[in-house]
Amino acid sequence: MNTKEIYDLLKAKFNGKVLAYNEPPKDAFIVVDAKSLPEITTFLKDDGQLLMDSLVCLSGVDYPDRFSVAYHLFSTKKLHKTVIKVNTDRENPSVPTVSNVWPGAVSYERETFDLFGIIFYGHPNLERLLMPDDWEGYPLRKDYKFPAFYHGINAAGRSPGTHRIVNRDNYA
Image (cartoon, rainbow, N blue to C red):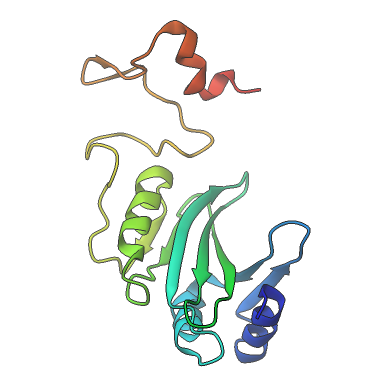
């Protein structure tokens, strides 16, 4: 089953909660309503036609007007895959957790929270994963300003020639 067929199945089952289908030549994905994410992901995992039992990856995406969370799913029994996305606003980015559907989401959601600041409500332990607990801001946001120092330590920590790698102001 391909992503278009999965989209058609979801659209028939959850009309109004399945918002869009992005066709190739870009990577195909399905956009669903964030509030309906628990219901739709449970269906994706449990429905006999789909059996999407593996959350391969979960990642945040920073767009100029919103954040998105992309869920890369795979069925080890049916051998098909798809990508589901949800959008959330920039001011209060939050989506429901899917850790109750795919336990492996616990770490992915913590990482996405840590680097993008997206809140996964219902998460069992939403704490920073990669950055120190007192780190300010979310380093993968496009508007993030990397600090020069952290607790008196040169946070850039590199020679002047490599400073451009992390200083987003130098990206054109």
